[in-house]
Length: 313
Length: 296
Image 1 (cartoon, one colour):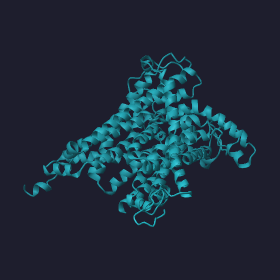
Image 2 (tube, chains in turn purple, yellow):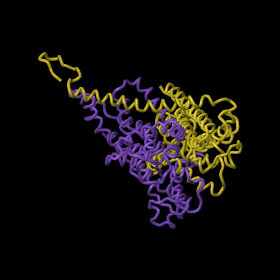
Image 3 (cartoon, chains in turn cyan, red):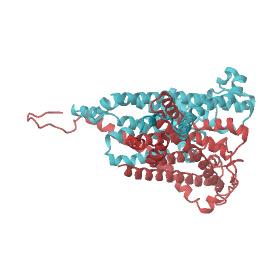
Image 4 (cartoon, one colour):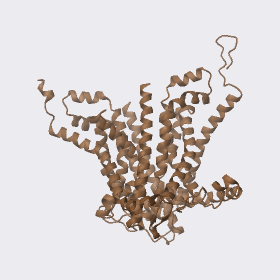
């Protein structure tokens, strides 16, 4: 074959395929930019008409007051509850799968975790509001009566209590983020070099000591990333929270009291909104988008960096 | 660990005392965390099956949606079943080919250049964008101009599926051995032909099962549909125009209804939805298992 044949210009069909593939890849960036621009545009009326009052505590659509602080607070509280409950459990399961059970027992456990991820958000919400919340209400009531009047506990867990509350939403969110935190932590933990683990055992370490000495230093970066990704999910998860959070735009230290968070107020009120009201809900969406994008970028950055370090090592 | 006086006779038993207690406690806590997950999962599945199974029948799956006050044995969820199938299918037709092409760019063309790294990174970030944001986005750029329709809902679900399909396809393409590509190039094939006839067929099992998992995820989503398709009680066979409804939307509305009949229809719809997602997951696993056997 003459040398020229290899440097010949590629046929048109071949080049256009490359262009189409590139366009499909670029679509991701285009969509992300379009989300920011289009929702930002819709939300601009809220920012211009309310000024700094967008961060006030009063949300009263009938009175044209659209302060977002109660929802930001609710988002932070419910996400924090979810993280506090889901992270130890997820890391525990991840360690159980990688370090304790034999491989053929790991498969059914992974199936259970996958099943947890398959249950749709709205089914968690349906079960949460019709079954779980009424049951929790009895527990909340007895705890509430028990701690009423005690300084710190009373203001966290005391009355008023309601089955649909910050805490119920936090628990449901914890169920929902457990699969992703578990599977990401497991991936990271599984990359611990066998030689590190065997080294610890050879020095006479128990399994716990091996985990603390070999697995943990190796995987803490990746697990931090996994936790942040779980946090992003917990902040944005909408439908389950919308059904069980109690729908009350209040800022209170009482975790068993009804509250609201950003995604659920959008879900519940957008249908009836127009004008500044709709623009304010769009604005909540923009804030939520900004929060979750930042958290996800940081988290993915941490995960990628720790993965790269492991490849390099 | 005590070493006896005889060389080569090492005590390999678990150390006694405090260290053993701590170690066993840690193991017990790990098992406990698994139990803490299994209990609520079992509780949810049991409730959905117990309350949903009695509702489900052929006439329930095809009947029209009655007013919320109607008793449990009246009407059904037919329009929601039709809507979910229409909208999810349309979203799949849009998102899967684009996602596969995007992954082809990342793995076959981009390689390690900065643009491909950026797209891959942002695609992972996009999987973390809350689904309700996709609903607001499509509302702003589509619904405000063209009105509510199944297509609008499908666009929102498609945005949700796209990064998931890209990620799963990309992982599969990376597993295709380079020798396959090199062999085809040696025969004089162009890059597009190698991709279409060698690389993609080699990875097809994994691509399909990844796509099915993305479909399962999308079929259960409510938030992107709330402001794009609304909810209706009659069948809308035209996915391209007019308000529509879906199983998740119906469950969402009925969950906050005080009427027992509406709640019963909600449980029936929930069981239908979980069954759909479960079947998709099982099929995806079967395909993966089959593919893994071929690969060996």
